[in-house]
Length: 296
Length: 334
Image (tube, rainbow over the protein chains, first blue to last red):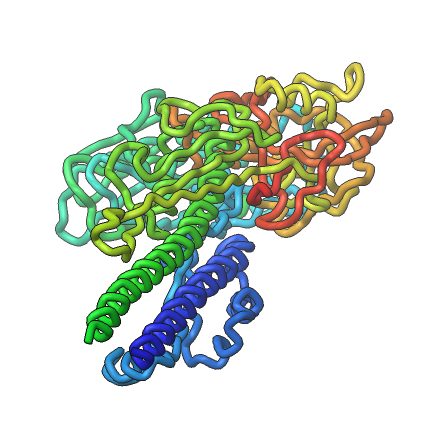
C-alpha cells in the first residue's frame, strides 16, 4: 500500500504545482499584455514586455530560459496578444513515462489580449499639395489645391494694403494646364478637386477615358462660396452632383469638356468628376485649364 | 484470519477518502486558475469599454451598442463564452461609471448612454468543470470576477500640436463642459470688442504671409505641422477677429479629419488653448480643451461646438487637475 500512497502523494504534488504555475503564467501574460498596451499602437518594445512578464513570473525562475516562452502578436491594429508558455517537469515516476510520449513534462500556456489605445483626434493625413501655400510674398497667382485645402472664401475681409502686389516683378498672364489623376470610381460616385483662382480667369475642365472606351460621365464646376459643397465629404464620394453649379456637362463619351461661361472668376472653386451607371475600374486623367500669372 | 479483509476495507475507505479530498483540492485549484483567467478578461474588457466610452463621447454619438460590442469582443477574446444575446447577459454584465466611480446606468440598455459616463464596471462569469467523484454530484462551479476602469480627470498636457488660434476662458469651458452645452468660439470676446483670436506667430508657429492666410492655415489642422503650443505661457492676441479665415480653415479641418457622427454630420475634434487671465494684448494659457465641431455649425460669424473629454496620454497616473477641462487618463480602478 505504501508505494501506492507515495505515488498518489507525488501526483498530488505534480497537479498542485501545475495549477500554481498556470496561475502564475496567467498573471504574467496579463501583466505583459497590460504593459504592451501602454502606448498608442504597437509602440512598446518587446524587451519591455518581456521584462514585465519575467518580473510578474518571478515564482517561475526557469521561465526566462525556456526557448520561445513569450510570443507578442497584434491580431489587429487595435489589440495586442501576449502568450506565455512553460514546461512543467513531472516528478511522479509513472506519470513521467505516460505523459506526453515519455517526455515527462506538461506544457502550460496562458494568453491575454488587451486593447491598444488609438490616438484621438485622428491626425490629419498630410497630402502633398500641387502648389505650396502662398509664401511671404503674396504674388497674385492661381493656386491649385488638390482636395486638401478648401478655403471657402478668399480672405479679403481683413486684408490690408500689404496684400497688394508689391514691386516684385511678376510674369504676364498665361494659360495654365494642370493634369490630375482621378482614381477608379464605383457606380454613382465622383472625385472632387478644389481650384483657387487668384487672377480673373475662366475655368475649363476636361476628362479623358481610356482609349476607345465610352463611359457615362459628368463634369460639374461649383463656386465654393459661401461654402464648398463637398466640405466634410470623403474623396471620392458617393454623391449625386449637388445643385447650384456654375456649369455642367454630361455625356456617354470617352472625352468630356466643360468651361465656365464667366471669364473673370476669382476665388475658390470645386470641379466634380462624376461616374454614372457603372464602375470606372481604372484611373483616368483630367486637365484643368485657367489663366494666371504663374502656373504650378 | 479476519485481518486481511479488514485491511482491504480500511484501504478502500482510505483511497476513496483520499481521492475525494484530492478531487476537492484539484477542483479548488481549477477554480483559482479560472478566476485568474476571468480577471484578465474583466480587466481587458473594462479597459476596452472605457476607451470606447471616450470615443463615443468625442463623437457625441454615445452609442450604448458600440460599448456593448467592445466589451463583449474583448471578454470573448480572453476566453469568456458568449451566449449570443445582445449583451451576453449570461456571462457578461456591465454598468457605466461616472468620474467618481459611482454607477450611473446599466450597459446594454440601448440608445445613448449618459453624458456623464467616464468608464465601465464589467463582471464576467464562466462554468468550471470539477473533478469531484460522481456521488458528490457537483459537476461544475460558477466562477465570477469583475473589474472597473475609468477615464479619470487629470492635468492637461504641457504641449499640444495643431491648436486652433482661438482662446477660450477656463471658467466658460468648465461650465460648458460640465453641462454639456454648446459653445460658440466666435461669441466670447476676451474683453469688450476684443476677439479671442490668437497671433501664434509670436509663439513660434510657422507663418505664411498675410494674417488672414496665417489664421486660415493655423486652423486647418495641417499647416502647423510639428509645431506645438506649450502651457503655461502668454500668447499674443491678433489685431482683428479674422473669423472668416478661421472658418475657412476649420471647414478644411473637418474635411481632412473625415469624421462623421451618428447623424451623418461631418465634424472635427480640435484643440483649443484655455486662458485664465488676459490683458489688452495677450492671454495667459493654462490648459487645453477639445471641442467637437460640426461642419454645419461653422460659418464666418459662428463656430459652435461641444467640449468633450480627451486622453492626455495613453498611459499614466492621473493627477487631479484644479479644474476638470476634459483631460483624462484611462486606467483600472483600484
